[in-house]
Every structure is written in C-alpha cells, then in structure tokens.
Length: 261
Image (tube, rainbow, N blue to C red; front, side, top):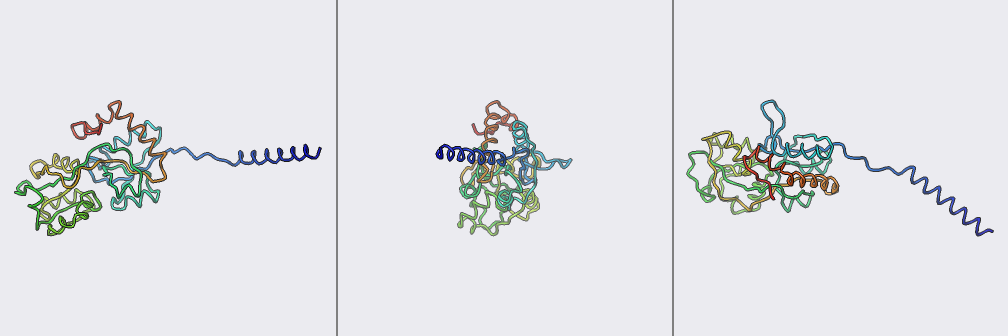
C-alpha cells in the first residue's frame, strides 16, 4: 500500500512540474522585420536617387526576398568601415550591399551562397596612358576604406609600397570625384560600381580589364548565431534564381544576367 501511495505522489509531482513547464515556456517570437545595413552611396548596389529614395540592385533583391518571406525590410545606412560592429551589435540583421565574401569576414559572420562574381579593376581619367599596375608606380591611388581593394593592397606590401600614396575614402564616389579633378591618378574598385559610374559619366573615365587580386564573389552577411534567418533568406534567393526573378533584376541594373548559376 505504501508503495502505491508513494508512486501516486511521484506521479502527482511530475504532473505539476510538467504543467508548470508548459505554462512558462514561450516560443521565440517570429521575426517580423529584417534590418539591412548598407553604404547608401554605392551605386548600382545601393544608393539614393534624385528623390532621396534608397534604390539599387541589392535593394530590389532584398525587397523581393522580404516579400516572399512575409516580413518587412528596413534599409539602414551605416558607416561601412564599421559594418561588422553594426551587425554583431544587432543594430542591423544583415549586410547586403555588394559585399565580397572573404576568409577574414567569414571569421566574424555567416554568408549566403555567392550570388555574383566581383572583380577589382583600375579606373583612370580618359587621357591616362597607363596600361597596367606597373604604370601606377609612384602614383596616388584612391580606394574605399575597408573595401576589398583596401584588403588586397594591405595584404600586398610590395604593391602598396610601389604607390606614392594610397588615399582612402568613405565611399567610392568621393574617390571618383578626386580622380576627375586630378587629386588621385587612379581608383581601384569593384567592376559593378566602377562601370555603372562610368556609364553615368560618359567620356570622363577609362577602365583596364586586368583584374587586381583574385576574382571574388558577392554574398549577404549575417550574424554567426543567426543561422535560421540566413537559411530562410537563402531559400527564397534560390527560388528567385530558379524562377528567373533574379535575372530580371540583374537585367534592370546591369543590362545583363550576372547572377551566378
């Protein structure tokens, strides 16, 4: 009889514990918005139009992805040189702005699958006679601070030492403005930005086809502990690629389908 009573008491206590757990347990709230960090002066990936609206290739991609996920998207301009601090400080949820996937960046964030190739090219004034990197010895070269071009030059001490000066800018438009006025002799930057900028400023610049460093790939950066969001976004990106939506957005901004297949 004592054994039966003891057994019933144990069952009652277990039931109370389980009931208590059930009453206090809460599910993680569904994410209703994704905050995208970007440099809003980086056409054609993300920039402001004449009405001060943020537009661009990556903007259209992010809007379509958010629509398919059923969540709101907010675009938050940030200091691009502090992008990892903004991401890991949870002030933004993703970095989606023509960002190269590099081994160093992989240490601090998760990445989507690559969606576009990225080349670093040399842009020059129209009247320049330079034919390659060797012709920039003793010259002033402009780059965006903490950009892929910056990383390539900082990692190549011999290349850096060959230049008279490496002048770093907060955005590439500033660098091109100084290129136009002769304050720098060349700008090294992403092919997508440089060629888009050239198309808007015809007859002012030329570009050399030789790639500086290795051909990179672009991806979206997420926090290391945000695997779930990364996977959700990747799923809709795969759908957009499969149904041709990504190709249409690429055609709109580049006049060609540059999406990695």
